[in-house]
Length: 93
Image (cartoon, rainbow, N blue to C red):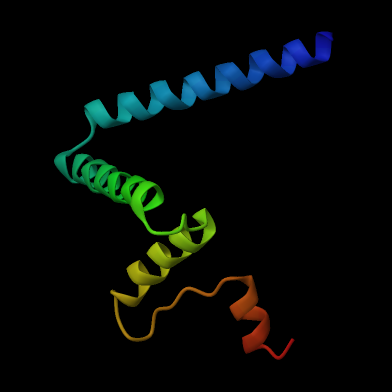
């Protein structure tokens, strides 16, 4: 019982520290970092819309890996995202 309470307190403090640190960084950061947060907010809004309104609810893993794949493929023709399945296939497993 005491261990659960300790773990709960540590977890709560960790989350609070993360949120306070993120807010502090956001408030004191340069505009370029604020733009990143705005773009991530846009991504989150689109992500939520797809999850709620797509014909069949897509899996989170599929959406996130697709976003990562698109981000890297947009850089140049030589950058690509390889998940575990792709990696094992490319080395012959």
